Image (tube, rainbow, N blue to C red; front, side):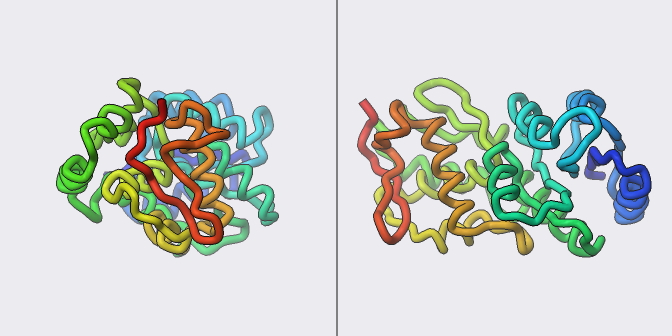
Length: 240
């Protein structure tokens, strides 16, 4: 049974989500404040977090960023705000999906299933993917970036680095095909969940965040290169 943490201050909305998800077979924990949500995230160990942006004590973005310091659990933002800038900010803070209120419960559960499926690598053989990546990576590059498949982390120059699920999927794709130029559309398809919010702009945000985690100088990237007018590629050159 998968566990879902609902961080939502609207009691009626929270109860409705809890009831519906419980009927769908999920174990649900509810938090009505940001600080309470952070405690539940640490103790309940959810497989998915549904997070409202507007909370009585903390901003939802703050909660998201705080969770991301210690966990890669998939986070879906639930919000009345539909502006693109709000969605981009949520992505930058580490969210994996963004659903605007009002929404259908059917769409919510479909997206929830997609995020959990991605996080548990149910749709593919993670071990085989890692092995394929290792076969295509040069010894020098392998020392720079490796995948920790079990914990879905990156090993960057010997140091474990946490990523969001989208960042991890992108890095996994890059490592499996060093030197290949990927269009933004190909990268979108690699990380898209069920009708998730993934656009060209979202890909650019993920790349910026990845560069901050793997490049010695993110402003002059040596590993993830921009192919102007098309997309990105991962180069086998070491960032010395």
